[in-house]
Image 1 (cartoon, one colour):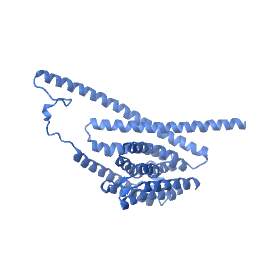
Image 2 (cartoon, one colour):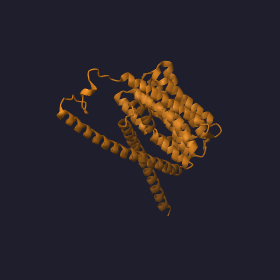
Image 3 (cartoon, helix red, strand yellow):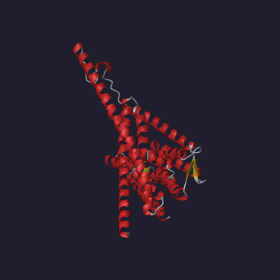
Image 4 (cartoon, helix red, strand yellow):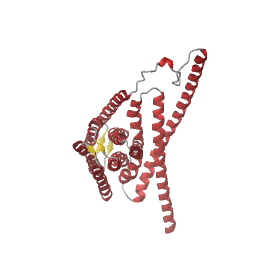
Length: 358
């Protein structure tokens, strides 16, 4: 009888792990589809590229964390909601940014990073102070939402300036002298008919592209929601089987899992040697995690989101430490160095050790 129970328990654990991993796959693929399709829809609707990059892509890459934490808050799993959001910030800096700096050190661009870095530090300090009573108040968290709005506005303004700066002006082409495909137009009725045909064909193709993007947008959203539900449900079960607090699963498996889009972006940046894409994406994701996700969770949970002792006095202080390690050395030395990356990674290992032991 004991052997049968042991086999049954092992089977349940394996199934739980499998379904948890299914949730990760769904949420990662769904996030990919969501960002791509939303960007295409916005672009085809005439939304400027700099706005798409500053809003749709930024929020889209953190959507897995937002949906996962929101579902957890709605189901009363505050430990997973907070652990995922704060744990994702710690993973983004302590693991992903550290790896990026180890492989791709570069100069510190004060104009590009200083405002974002200060905003990130300010966000976690405000969050920590708000949670000292043992919960996050939805009304007070509006301050974090204001920080989020200011951050996004700055992103849009900077994006617009960059778009204007990099815009290529073709002085040799008269807009009236090209057809729908950008080819030189010829005079005469035959050319007019050809142009009309090309325009109709282009319009038809655009309609098909929009329809396809809408389908993938819906599928992406469904995958993210379904995957997030799997992460919360089976992450909680996994914590029970392992005999560890839900917070541990949240700051490790769930947080790192939902941060995989940032990891993929970082790996791509390392391969293509585009350091701005990697660090900028990480800082942006962190501000959104802290200033959008947790206030939303506080509202969903009825105005008060309970904060565990270890979340308040381990996760958040380490989070403050990570943000300082990510920005201050770079400001002082005017560069992101391998040494800085190594120190951040070592601190992350220490954080994981302390979290598991305590």
